[in-house]
Length: 231
Ligand code: SAM
Image (cartoon, rainbow, N blue to C red; front, side, top):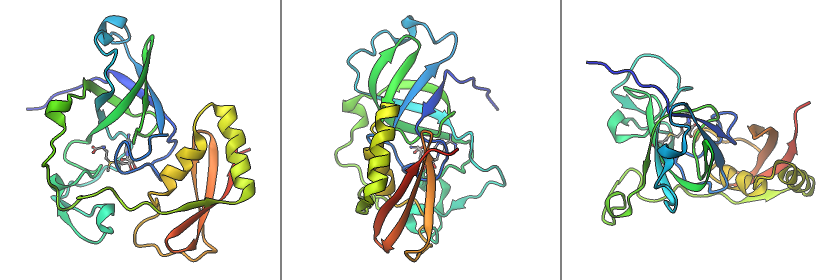
């Protein structure tokens, strides 16, 4: 048996690349996106009843996941990249069918697009379906997962004076909460868990259209060095 699915929409998000995207939604509330609905779902009828709904489930394609042979076990970054667990015990992007699911906040509804925050989705992600979050059914108070019992530890993020001024200027230009976005994403410590960089090593990522550079002055601290627009 096989099925073919067509996207109902495309994500336009702050994440121009996979690096530094939080591992789950809502970890970076300042991560915003719009979901452009595609015909025939770009009509108001398809959105009737969503007014007042605070959160949505998005079912989407990991369209930029590396292809390759399927494995029964994976090494999730959260476990340091060394420990293997069954693919069905993980949220890894490399999975039998490259399908992801994320709960995101619905900030607003425009003609043919949904305004979202708290996303963990790469720009250009195809969305297969949208479902309203149903608190009584989707929020399970006694749910247990020993592999991911609590949110990941957040590292403190500090700024050089110049980088903060640059980020504030780009925040105004973009009309987006860029300072909070950078702090929320970097505090998740995007670098691979096995790397233990010295203070001289710099890292970079593109958020919206700006390049953010940082380093680790101490192993468990992040300092933003520069926020610039590529020429
Ligand atoms: N919340 C989803 C889930 O549980 O199915 C995604 C979890 S997955 C661990 C999150 C990671 O997927 C992000 O850190 C990002 O690097 C990656 N990602 C997001 N959108 C993607 C896309 N369209 N293609 C490939 N990888 C993507």
